[in-house]
Image 1 (cartoon, helix red, strand yellow):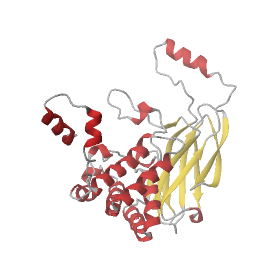
Image 2 (spheres, one colour; image 1 turned 90 degrees about the horizontal axis):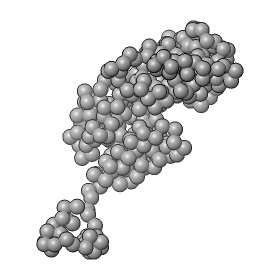
Image 3 (cartoon, helix red, strand yellow; image 1 turned 180 degrees about the vertical axis):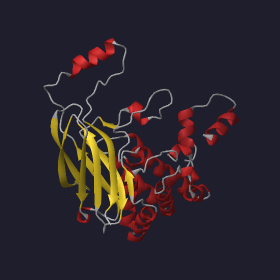
Image 4 (cartoon, rainbow, N blue to C red; image 1 turned 90 degrees about the vertical axis):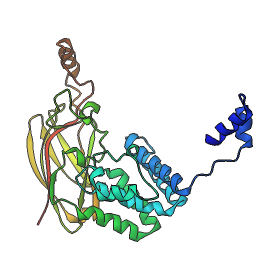
Length: 300
């Protein structure tokens, strides 16, 4: 744009923009800058597209492009993993400060203020780095394991695999309204991330209910493998489950809960209409499940 503006000023009159575009040389972009932009495309695709059909494919595409453009950006990917591996704002981490001084500085618009573990993006980066150099993938996994806690409550939004799988107002900070004390699931599936070494088993201590189904069975998968199920009702139920180490992998793992569909015999619309007539907030979409606690801990 600076080159085009300079030529326009030299002409002293409104130039033919199309002719300028054809006549001027193409701008030269440093590989480090272009690779940073391509990594930014991967980050925004991971953060914005939710369940878009080709999202994961597009994330990997942009990561591959960035590495092809400038292989040195692999260190920036490791910086991202390091920053996300600790339960702190990324701006407080040494990894973010190191990246800021590099040839591939990521800015706030690249998602540094994103306060989730960023599981989908991290998984894609580890896989893409592993195709180039297995040692890089191992280094990324080691960074995750370095700060892995022995236990946590996965209801905390940091551990949600897909933060956009919430009602949008509940995803945002509660400044002028009361926040919800539970995780409400507006999709048939709720996915969580957990970082653990493979050699240890896990326990899940779940307190949950089915707001729109009187009785149903919730299935559990770990890294895509069915590992168990448990029954829920409209009342709060506590269940303790065991995850065997054979279904886990060192580093990042995905734990998913698959909820039954709402009971078609329930008249939800009369409740919606009644609340609206009273000027009260209501849900126009079903809540498949509600989770008050999801404690996960290593088995020693």
